Image 1 (spheres, rainbow, N blue to C red):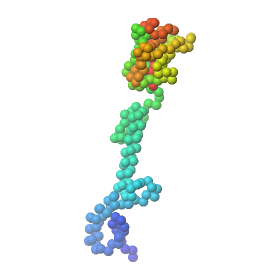
Image 2: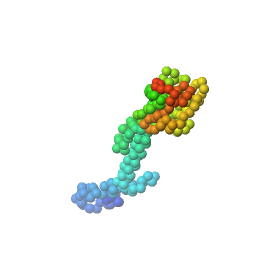
Image 3: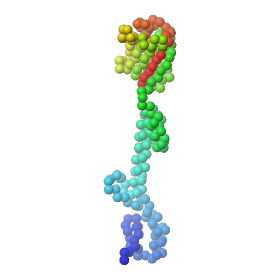
Image 4: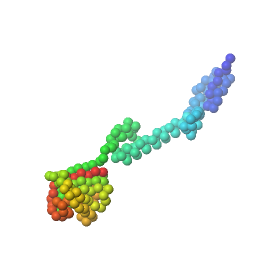
Amino acid sequence: MAQDKYWDGTKWVPISASYEEFTTHLAEDAIDAHNAKNISIIDSTNKFTATDVEGALSELFLFASDGKTAVASAITAKGVAASPSDAFPTLATKIGQIITEPVSATGTANTGSVSILTVSGLSFQPSRIEIRYTSDPYKLFTLYDIGFSTTKTVFCNTTEGVAGEATISTYAGYVNSSGFKLPFLNGTAFPGQGSNYPVTWKAIK
């Protein structure tokens, strides 16, 4: 007849003690013997460094924590604030808030007394800016594009194509992450020849 055995934390041991001793083991010794740190794992696919249940659980927790940190950092880099402490459903919601289309801003303004347009309050640095007459947006306009030069704007019209260019710094101009200041084409002449033109502008990140 097969002899009953119990697990002492490392091996199966035949039960040769009295019933009283056996029940004492169940009530006391087995509590420590069956702690997660005392139970080994068979890691046949080598997923863990640990060799016991407690160590493996710690590794799983750390893996999940590192994963949340990486995901939260990636979401934040896309312009949506996220934290590793956010729950997974919250992170999923924030992923859905990421804007994948090009970021842009538009507005209307007046070029001022020397045909210089100043815009503030942007939340990004534009790579392209178009400034057009509000009354005739397809005829004459000023174009800034980072592909042309970071220091120049180009004046264009539909009749003559490129009508000229100006160095931005000549007019104390700039393009940065909060706005821009650019000269505006007056007819086919350079800025400063006229004033107070109502214009429509568009800035693209």
